[in-house]
Image 1: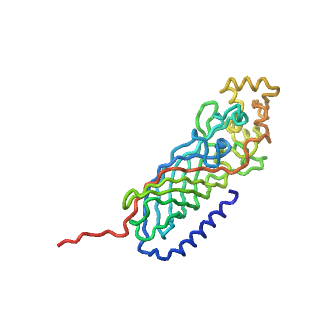
Image 2: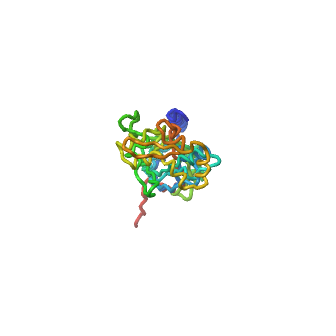
Image 3: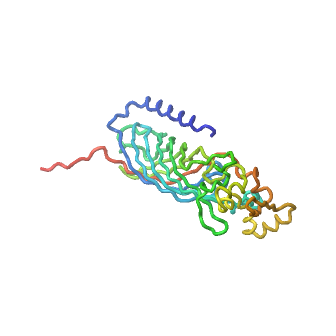
Length: 323
């Protein structure tokens, strides 16, 4: 999925071709609908690699809610807008130390509340030839579009347990003098692609279930991307809290005595760095030093899965005749 724009263009041309084959769908059969959706939200990234492309671990699934407005344009496709709000989360603390010791020692975590505005084209795999009352009882569909989202990753201070905003702390040196790394934006776009199925509940009501992947252009949904920066520079320009949040590896040992014994038995299990300000930082060997690997550099993705209840607005209101 290196270039999701190609998939969007392909679906667009397929939609146009399909519609050209269905000119019998008259303008009078077009309609509008409104709806609400309740979803589960998850993500795949450095702090939850996920079991597969389909989604992340169920442990980190969080709720998402939204509202939608749809314009039914033809026998097979519709234009849909959706506004939603939800949360994604992840943590190294739940990684299995036997299978994924590196993540357990890194000991990073995050949560991120995402506000999304999305527009997409919905393509029905089964056509509706005629009035919406004559639509099939079960319609599978695919969709593709464009989304804007605002996000704000937070992490817990290992000393207090308080949640703090991560972007202002420049945990990988973003925007810090002497570090060649620009700050990331909290305003992003994504390419939504997904599949679903709608079931006709009644003349005007549909219940749908869908799963949609949001292919983003950022690797900072979890505030983790590349390598560790110089903690001395981070503390000088962003403060002590920023230096603590940049490398939480030593706190993984304090929270897990068994892991502490395992690392202490290894030669060079811990390293210490004295900064120009006189502070001494402790880290697990291989973490926290400038250039040590912190993330994998790949773009993050979030997934929205759930139920959509939709009400079809009648084309016209029929008034009773009075005699």
